[in-house]
Image 1 (cartoon, one colour):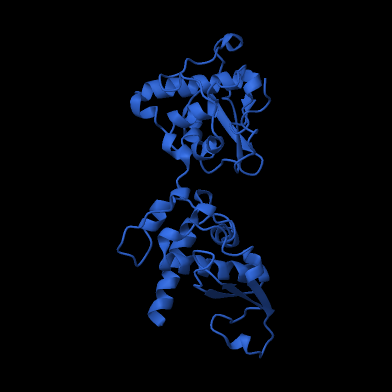
Image 2 (image 1 turned 180 degrees about the horizontal axis):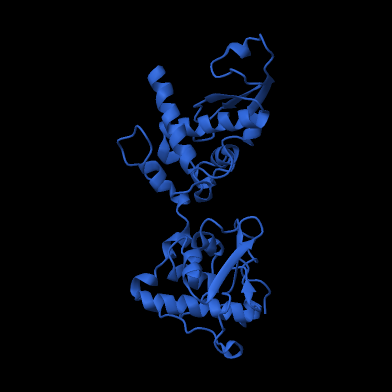
Length: 305
């Protein structure tokens, strides 16, 4: 038993290093908003599977393992683990000084146990992790088998990330990305949020490949901010809590800004096509850690002509 608890602790520590957001949301995505193609929701809501107890000094709960100095206990009880009718009940507890902290500890323990049981059946949304879900499973402590993340975890936009860069020289990539940024800066009056590029301001027609899609193909995930930082013509500032605003660098002179035209498309993007819904999240990968959370479907396209 002690060995099992030791392994759970090691898995929790490993997951915590790579996790983003709240553990409640991560668990809820697995259990409550599970895709229908993988059986659908296991429970209506994870919050309904929790009960809380205020720990009074001298009570039986106060003597429970992990309860030292804790004021709240959260008990989590999931009737199913991977399918709506599998009957694989999962129970965890969390002790902390606040209800929210106790809830988070119970949810973190649940995620760890689920990954220890059936790692390839756990819904792991990419936005919740600092590394890809597949990489997360590969590094899972205590496993000697390589597990594959569910296909739902592989964002379609990731398949397009950097595809143009593989066919171009570094200089060509640099020139094309710079040309796209100059075009956007000129069209947006000298600054723009890359998650809210206006097609109308750019003069794009419906069906023309969006700028975010072109940037996604030219840059690897997380590559936009380093590119801006390394280029003498561009700069960026924080925008909102997590966003970025791209501007001209101090002292940089826009070359013939008023006469800048749309950059020539590459061979792969010359055929115009309307972006699919999944591509609307492309800049979340390209921008990297300062990116805004995925905006609504019309946020990238801006005004329609």
